[in-house]
Structure formats: structure tokens, C-alpha cells
Length: 169
Image (cartoon, one colour):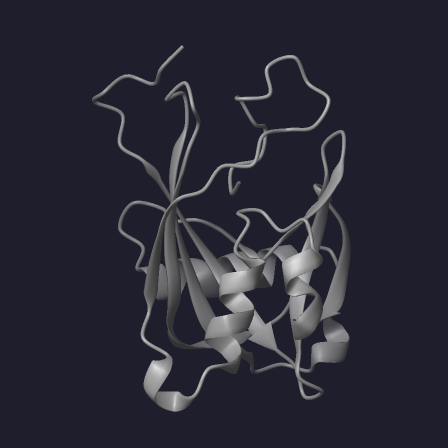
């Protein structure tokens, strides 16, 4: 069933956090299958994108961050229209020791550091690994934010494969 036309899209902010050895911090979730998300979450009414991202990362993995710049924007729209999320991915830097990261949210199974060159092979939701790698490794002059359009990853082995369970997809 499609979402009512009057229901606005959900806004999700996410942080791509490089660490000293050139790696990006990602989060593993498990809802029937394992997949990765960049740390982040929803924006509350009256909260700026930056405030939401700083709050969400601290709540999820206990890390203080500062935002650098916007990297990528994409929509996640379910094929049946039942879900619409606008994802904004920011480059962020740790302002607290990276050694202090750990899952703080019960939905998170683990926090991992993944080499940049493995992002394209990772089951990352939304599926932005290839674009994220290209953006993070591009020359200075080629690093403008990119709009990626609508990206959707159906849930594996489900009868309702068009309807995913992950808010970020």
C-alpha cells in the first residue's frame, strides 16, 4: 500500500567517518540479515541536519563528531511507494577518541572499520559504497556533493521483497 501523498519523506542523515589509517566507520544491523549502515538517523522537527547527525552518532556508537561537508544525497523509495527516505551523507571527523566507539543502540550488532577500497563490496544501505569511495578519494576539484537519485535494496528471501524493513535502505 502506498504511503499517503500528504505524508512527507523521512529525512535521514549519515556520517562517513574516516579514521587515522584511512578507513571509514560503519555500523552492522541485523533484521533477518546482516547489512551495513553509516551511523546516523532521523532528523527531529526543529533540529538542524548537523545537530541531528551529531546526536544520532553519539547515541548509536558513543562518538563525538564534527561535520565537514555534504558528500552525497539520494532518495530511497519503495517500489510500491510505501516508504520514502531522503538520505544525506556527510563527511564527519571524530572529536572523541575512536577507541571509545561501541554499539549503544540495541538494534546495532557491531561497529566495524572497513577499508575504503572494500566499500563497493559491502552490503551498505543505501547502496552508496562505490560512489562514497569515489567521492572520498577524488581530487579536491572533483569533490562536489552528488545527487544519486532513487536507490532501493530489496530485502533478501522475503515474499514482499519490494518492501524493506530498514529505514535507511
